[in-house]
Image (cartoon, rainbow, N blue to C red; front, side):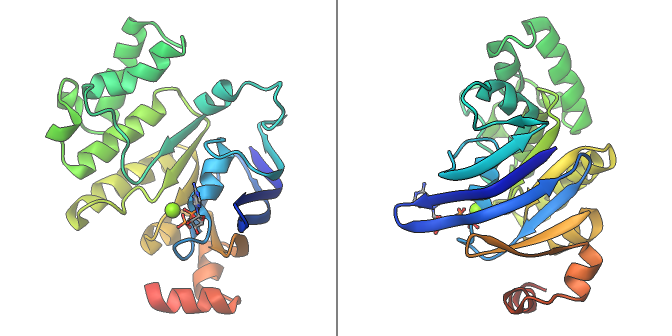
Length: 240
Ligand code: ADP
Ligand code: MG
């Protein structure tokens, strides 16, 4: 579904992604862990071109997305993204947040988008919040709405960048639970997280990023049970 070849990104002289070559198959649930500043967010943001790479290739569903002939907007429709800070539009209702992109991009008319929003609100367990504003919601509810918004375009893959890191502890569970349901439904997912329980339980493959490189990757069982990279061992000793 996604393949990067020698993906490179630098800010000034600081190399943030150092030749990342990685393949993500349809249906996989990739969990990315690693220390702060290791390039995890930049990697995700390059995948949907929120950041423009400085070198290498990104292939998505058979298309080279760095080829200017390919329409970035079509690509973005197929990749939903969920951010740590929710990024909901504060002056729009929950329903408007969910329907905005599909209507604006001409994928659905208003009626269709409203029907889809109602379905999604039911799916994320918040059918009664359609007309609420983000500030009236708890953090966990905001993130469930952000997930619903990302699902509105029927994406083929969902990218999550520390979706529970900004939440009060008692709200982490409801968001992880929703993500587990998505995973069980077969969604292809790439999840940057510090939730090691989620990585073990849901991940099909866990990646350790450090200094702009993927230093180790394995099934959760091997990754946690039998780590080999010294920096991964050190990292795990701090977080587990
Ligand atoms: P992580 O998500 O693993 O914490 P990031 O991908 O956010 O790491 O950042 C990797 C490195 O790139 C950090 O040193 C960060 O300061 C730097 N960086 C990220 N975005 C920018 C930017 N827009 N401009 C300059 N430096 C950046
Ligand atoms: Mg980050």
